Image (cartoon, rainbow, N blue to C red; front, side, top):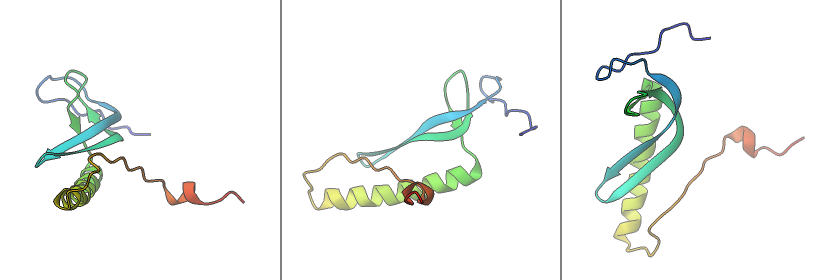
Length: 96
């Protein structure tokens, strides 16, 4: 159990809540949305603060997805919207 107090939102002076949120990033006309990730979220305006580990993983994944989308756009693909879901290795194993 986490015994540390919740961080306080600097702008609204309210304790943040640990809950799922969606990270959205846009660049060069491409938007990447990563739903269902945990962060400390301000209850007033919904601004999320991610743990360093989560932030590192988000930035790496978003860079990869942006590169793929930009490559597709460069080839003038007819496909304009994609949805990708990644399962953990445990979910992919067949039941014994």
